[in-house]
Amino acid sequence: EPQRPKLQLQPRTKPTDEEKKDEMSEEDVKRKTANDVKEYLAIRDIEEGVQSIEALPEKNRASFVDALIAAVLDKKQDQVEDAGKLLGTLRERSVLDETMLSEGFKAQLTYLDDTSMDAPSAYSFMAQLLVAAQFGREQIDSMGEVMEGEGLKPPKERLLAKVDDLSLIHI
Image 1 (cartoon, rainbow, N blue to C red):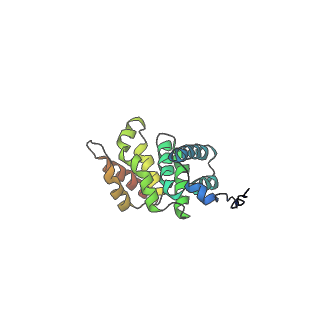
Image 2 (cartoon, rainbow, N blue to C red):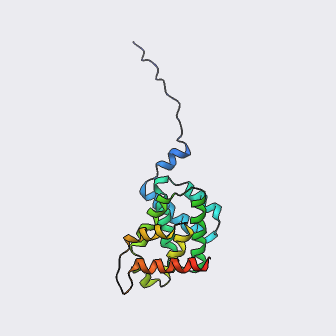
Image 3 (cartoon, rainbow, N blue to C red):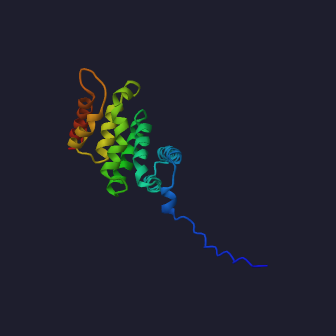
């Protein structure tokens, strides 16, 4: 009876950390960013925060920025400062570039006026976060184009007034 040729199996390769990172599903990314934000705000360790973002695929890093901003807009000043320190560090170390940051800010900026109904400090906190993330006034002005809302003073003008207040403090 004829013998079948032996199967020649290739050695199994484990995906590298980089490949695993790129394989995260949308649900995994949401869960990871929510957990990472919660953990960062609890322990306030910049290095931990940096590592948790580095573990995300670059294409998903804006979602961490969005989650971080959403988490602190209705919190206290010290948490906003902690979030700002992390955003500034991530920008300085090039873990986040300007595009990732502006993409991460976009959703929260769009509805900032609504957010401010429940969180009166939202404009002030958003201004602090934008400045901490090293955006200049012109960039903030341009990013503010997405803002929705009405009133005697349009939302973008309210935000820019808060940014201007900050620059007076830091002179």
